[in-house]
Length: 263
Image (tube, rainbow, N blue to C red; front, side, top):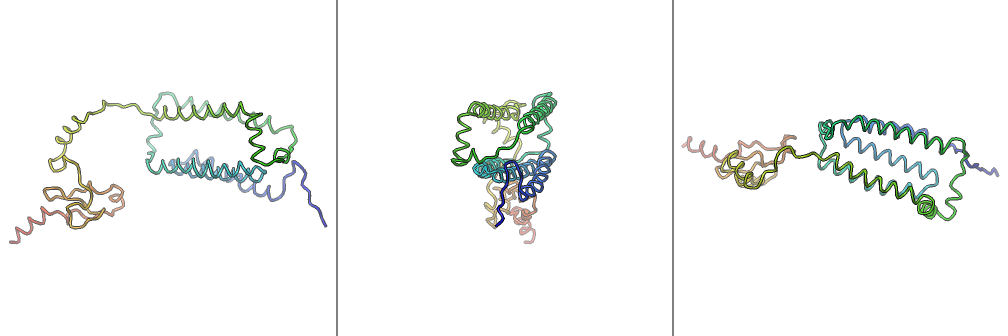
């Protein structure tokens, strides 16, 4: 009976095949995340990179990290971010507007410096040292091993990174905030603008689609008190898809005029 033994630091063939397949895909997805124009596509590519990292963690006997990567980051944080993007929507022109002048060169310089720092740290952490594996760290279990290292040896870097994440979140909120260019209008001024800019029939607001019409449906324009249809009462997405019915067929004012002419 042949006994197979893999020494510490030696990569098995399945693990090597997995790395050379998923590694380039993760690099391409990371580059695409930076080059794509739509934020939704960038978020999807980032979720793919996170899943690949989870596979690498599990392959390296860090099962708990892999499950947390999928459940917490990919399944919760990233999907929530993707949901907000799809709900609110981000226009490509918004990313071209600099809220703070001179921010782009500073960001590029900081990104290059951070990348160089990471390369230097990774090079010092891996080059010139023999791999010892995770068997000793996982002797009592992967969760216990991570908890012991995280809250004993690396508790100070862990707390510092937590503070940096909170600071980054607050900084993103400040940088994304756009100051108001005009004075906020009061309720009285809004009422005056509504009466001056719109007809008396729409001064109280547009009714919901299908109201006072012959068909109560979301794709049917509502009828105003004077009998004319209100195309703005239909959702804009239905208009863009061409699913809104022709408002002229529901114009009671025009229909009554035609009936009188026929008489």
